[in-house]
Structures are given as structure tokens and as C-alpha cells.
Image: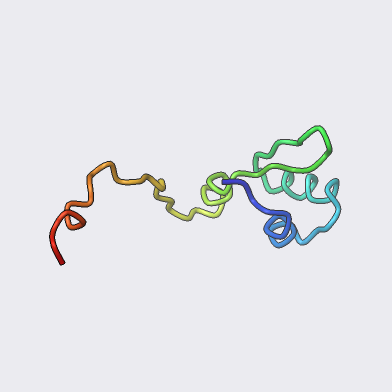
Length: 71
């Protein structure tokens, strides 16, 4: 997932996009810019930067067998 505008502001302590980009670059956080100038930062990139172990959100492909039983 992508960080929201509020998340970016909390991470960088900056409101302006140019200032956010400077802070992210100084911290070594990879980011991309959209054509409108807004900033894209992946939650996974931030988790890795912060050293937070992340687990992929994978839906189970196993059927819900309990749904077949009479309750």
C-alpha cells in the first residue's frame, strides 16, 4: 500500500511536497513522484527503513470448511 498524505506529513514533519521530498531523500527513503507532483511512498519501504518486520498480507486459499457444517 501507499502512504496517505497524512502519513507523509507525519513521517517528514513537512506539509509541502518539495520539503517532503527533501526530507525523504535525506533519510534515504525511496519515493516516486506522480505527474501532478504528489509523492508516492510504499508502506513496505518505510517499514524496512524503520526496521519493522513486515509480513505480507496474503489471503488464504484454503476453503472455510466450518461454513459447510450445520450450526
